Amino acid sequence: MAETADHIADLVGDVKLAIITDQTVERLHGPKLSDALSRAGLAHTVRAVAPGEPSKSVACASELWDWLADSGIGRYDVILAHGGGVINDLGGWVASAFIRQLRYVNLPTTVLAQVDAAMGGKVAVNHATAKNLIGAFYQPYGVVANVAQLATLANRDLRAGVAEAVKKAIIASPAYWRFLNEHAEDILALDLDVLEQLVRYAAAIKTELVERDPYERDLRRPLNYGHTIGHPLETVAGYGVVNHGEAVAFGMVVETRIAANRGLLEEPVLDMLIELLRRLGLPVDQDTLPVRIDPYRLLEATAPVELIRGGSRRFPLPRKLGVIEIVDDVVDDEIYVALRECGCKGGGPGDASMARNAAAR
Ligand SMILES: NC(=O)c1ccc[n+]([C@@H]2O[C@H](COP(=O)([O-])OP(=O)(O)OC[C@H]3O[C@@H](n4cnc5c(N)ncnc54)[C@H](O)[C@@H]3O)[C@@H](O)[C@H]2O)c1
Image (spheres, rainbow, N blue to C red):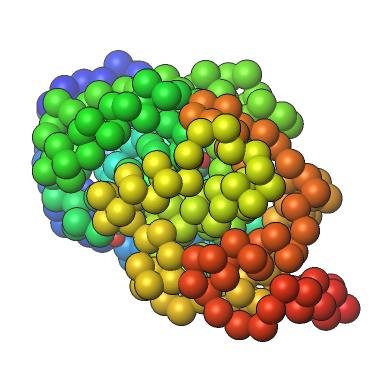
């Protein structure tokens, strides 16, 4: 942890840190971090919120602003978001609005956050209508990842995090795909050398996409692969019931089925994807999801995605490894058919558009 604290001190200089974390991360890693930061000469104060997706809320952000206002944190101080994707998204959003933007540094502690959420500057909290509805684009001042912190992750969270790495391999890198296939079991066994490569690879892919398109106008859109279905799935299941990586895994399968049914696939991406996700213990159909999904409700919940993405659900669909096509004419029945192929039951083709029209009214 000493090296981590030194990196943070080099980044931020002589400031006070306001550490936003969750209670699990604080219990497991807080004392060591605090000790190392003190040795590195950094004054700090800590606030730990409840762990999990429900903390990505306006209410929680508001409590954190109250705490910051009472903590003597000033314009040149820095927020350190120490935790998983929830804490990085929440901490970044809190920083984006406090004293008209405070600098923040992410210290991600889950695989998901180290390979994805900590980078890119999409910060947000959830709303009952949709995931990440209240948010901003606000880049972190820096990201410091220490893979040793991943050793305490629960097995379910470890597996879920790898889903975002699989996503990156499919959208951008056949070489990363080969790496994941070669090392799936080493990753689950928490081999630190392999985890370090996993994170470095992902960081390179994500920063390249984000640098070319920081505000998601175009080139960065492939990063939404798996999320057009995954985010609504999280919303209808109730935030925290299906965790984000699991929802993305299932979303990638549904979206790849849509691509297959359209005849877009130039390689057997669907079979390859399902095989790897199964090895990683991630959901690929209704039987492997932790909740039953009503296809109608899931379809209804895709409506806000159209608003967020400027009038279309805009599906990034794979053609082959590393090649994505952005498609904006996917109709409800195609989604419905793909959901049925995944074993999600209810109604029949044709009923889906009726359900969505009813929702629009
Ligand atoms: N901003 C982005 O670009 C982006 C990208 C992907 C995902 N996300 C967001 O990330 C969130 C999901 O992130 P997540 O899966 O990391 O969830 P999370 O932050 O809720 O962490 C999962 C669980 O792991 C625990 N935990 C964290 N670090 C730990 C450690 N080292 N040891 C033991 N337990 C630990 C947490 O307390 C929590 O219970 C979602 O809200 C998603 O929308 C954002």
